[in-house]
Length: 322
Image 1: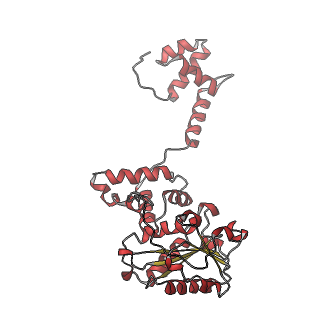
Image 2: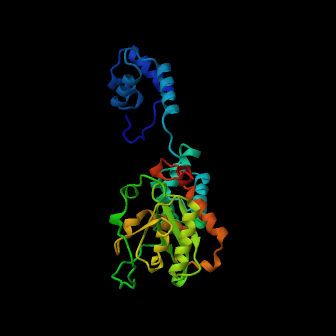
Image 3: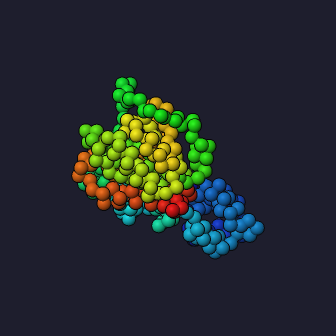
């Protein structure tokens, strides 16, 4: 046997020789020597396709059937690459969501780990054909790097009449019902007015309104407008931004307001998460004077139509009962 020979599958001709030599009473070692194969290769072939009486034609048929049925290596083709690019640029989908939705289109779609690896490989690729994919990494949630943390001096004043989040009804805390909101503010370029964002804690449906001022009266009026459009809002959870200082206006229309503890943004983590998605469409330093209501509504719709893993990849629009 030539030990330097590269391994290859047994051919139909070799299987016929095995059948003939077995009938002649040769041992597996002797057959392997005759074919230039190892005895273990011959042994596996006979056990797999015998074992009582080896038949070459039957063995060849079973082998071809196994090859047809086994899972094939995924081909990461141009169509997949274009699908990833489209969903990143247009919908700002995460690699996980791209992979899940891609498999509805093609069962052999690549995994989200592969999507991540490909995006970062494109960032550092110098190949001409990869040029249009080089900046896709910027559409990832943490594509632009992480924010540096440090101790900042608080400039927040005192908000009169606050109820802390600990006093929030259990049904709101456990997300048992619709009508319990979280709200926050997205600032634009040079910390100028940007967006007011409200989100239903149970269904994760989100509403956005453009802000023309950072004055508390304007912000609460806009939040009251959102609550009126939703209907049956019971509570709103806010942070300690001075923009929410006039929260008592909501109390007057029957909506209870609750505040997170200072420096505890995780206590209203749902709206913080949605703001992370919003930033994929409106990055920091966005000049919101150049953004119109139609663009804001378009982004709101895209996010509310976005499938979510917690809802078994249904969207907030599908979950929320109007």
